[in-house]
Image 1 (tube, one colour):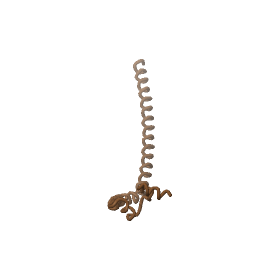
Image 2 (cartoon, helix red, strand yellow):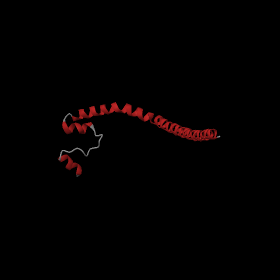
Image 3 (cartoon, rainbow, N blue to C red):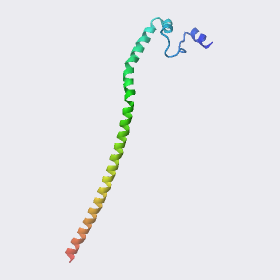
Image 4 (cartoon, rainbow, N blue to C red):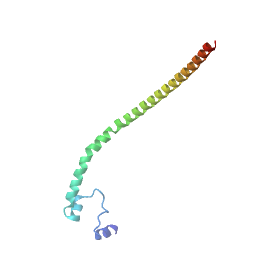
Length: 108
């Protein structure tokens, strides 16, 4: 069978990832000790990962809030841009009227 062939080849890659320490210790003497160290190393990551998972909802809500605020700011900037354009147009129009009045005074 496949397993017998792998055992003859001294290949243990067919074992599941979370394999039993007893089986692993028979493979290469003290390699099961390395496995224990690797499991402990993974424990160091579990707490930060749990914290991240717990805060994921808060982060998602904050992201939605930021997007809404950015949209509001974008709309406010567009509104101010339109107001500035109108004011600029009015000032240009008034400048033209002033120039026309000055010309009339000079010619009149």
